[in-house]
Image (cartoon, rainbow, N blue to C red):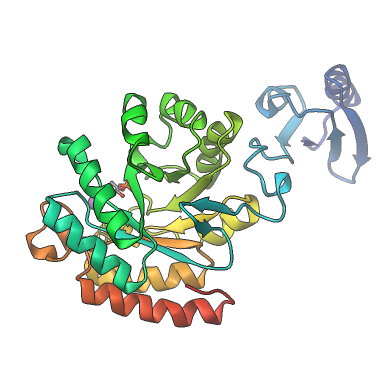
Length: 327
Ligand code: PEP
Ligand code: MN
């Protein structure tokens, strides 16, 4: 933690701040400049609230140096996390694709989607099971098994975890649930990997703090996902924050994927954003693909036609190679 005293702060004020820090277990290094006195503080744990210090007389500003998340921090595992989802590695040299329709609309639809996704080179099948729930999950599982894919599906409430555990290889925590701490705590006790999507109004730090709940409970099989955030721009559904990818790579050891479908909401913008995500270092992409997007029951406008997904995968192979990865 470091503290900048106000210009003209008195010796009594400086001493009183130092006294408080020393009482809290910090060693304080004082540097007296021409204008400001700066206090550098090293402590066993940075448990003092910086705002409480800023409320003291003569203090201009106080900042933490350590991040408020620990287990999700890159320092915790500098080499990065690699995890296995049904034999598929995420976070290694290979970039992976997870594809599928927004929802499981019928057995035929999900079967065809799985075949098309696998043919184009996807490793996972994604879909929401919504109202159909267990029947839909069974269809998703069967279709994925027949095409050699793993299953990713959204869990919306902690009560769904036991039932869903029989069908999915990876739980998705949707953007609206990123700070549903009872759900995160329950998933932290599961052995099943979790994909945690960034909330539409969440900072990167808040995303990492949510991941911390999963890790703290013992589930280290966590993948983050950038899926667009809310800005003043209205042309696209959300604004895809490509810069979050290299930022997360620096701050955290957790793999990060990108979902250009929910980010842009428009099929014609999904392909360039997927390319950008891989170029920026994403460990994978999550894409909505539908056999007949114009007839989709949900998110049709952002779902790729199967031939577009095939073409995207072809392009991503070249981009991945250019940044030292495979797909
Ligand atoms: C989804 O991937 O199905 C989904 C609803 O995404 P998000 O939570 O990012 O909106
Ligand atoms: Mn969708």
